[in-house]
Amino acid sequence: MTELKWLKLSGLMRRCVYNKENPACPFADFRKQDSYEQLESLGKIGDSLGKQLLGMCNSCRFQCKPIVNNDLEIANTRHFKVVG
Image 1 (cartoon, rainbow, N blue to C red):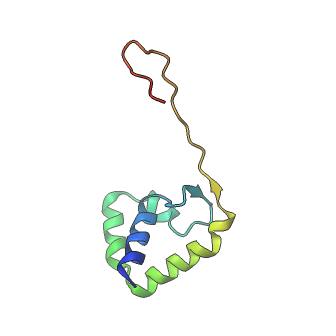
Image 2: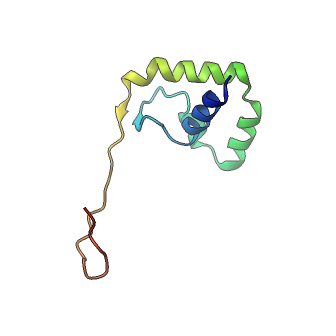
């Protein structure tokens, strides 16, 4: 795999780079692991498994739903500056 594909794969392991979610996401199980389990899983990923994971993501990403953004509205402007 190319460096660009490895970077995309590592980004998908942390959080969806498309800002979407899907119950069939191939990375959902990895994201639920703690940091030690993630480190062990990363050691097992090679070129073939990486290509397979990216292929699974590309095939199911069009059925993903956008992640709802929960922005916190700040009503106290005395201590916070409202930007925008």
